[in-house]
Length: 340
Image (cartoon, rainbow, N blue to C red; front, side, top):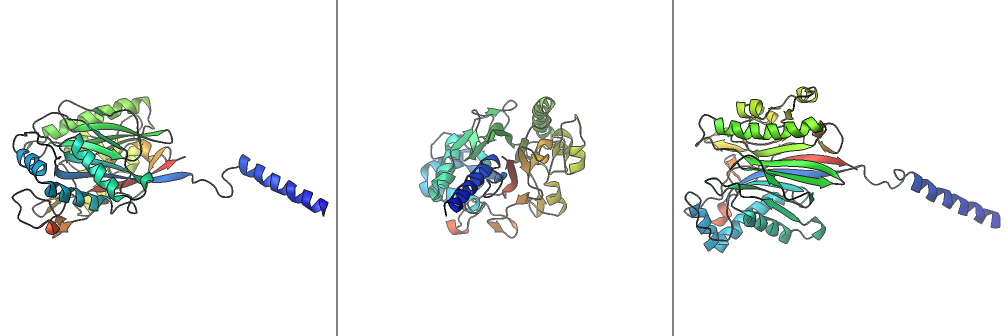
């Protein structure tokens, strides 16, 4: 009996030692975790403060500041879309366009957290900076992940916000942008300047580290096959070309395929456009650090009317709240794995 007990004790000790020396055996920790990234132009999301904006921002500035119900309904619609993703948790990183201010983005975070019961999944950080310019429609990043630093603006009076996000010491650089609209930039020169500014910033980081994980998202107001995206930003749907680029700093654009299939994130009359895009550096395709989950790019078709995104509208819109959508753009998403 004494011998049997001694043998059992030795066996238990060996099992514990084996687990300590080889933590990947038995009940192992996962080698990677998955994170959902979302970009969305939420269209005229203004805060609850009167800022005396000039037209065309004036009507939304005054409406949302004076009409609490209108602002609450807008936030509800935005939350309905975002919390329909990622098993009800919402995306881990949300990049937004057309938010008036830091306060407007903060209201989105507060509204989301109010509806997320698991406090461990609450969003913790908002990054939003005023780029100046004629319109109060900035970009912002909301995340439950760690943000390194306070973020920075790229360019001069351009809507481009650069935010470093970190998981387990592995950094993802996010550039959330909103390029000039076609109505005011008929030649595309201004959109090209946006693209080239971002491309130069990426090229500097890529020259130092070809494995850098760098993501550009935004409402480009151009399709993935337009010159500003292909030549200015240097983004292509040909993954082999990206992996074989060598010293040239190019991006992979998974939304080229969406355009080829006739999908749209925004519509002009009945013509679909994929203006809303997320493009990826070669480092996001190498299986190290942050890694793009193949074929995960999606256009999220929520609140649509006759196949188009259903707008929330403005103060002159006579539709009841229940018949309104959230924005004139659909959100776009991609998934990443982060290796431990």
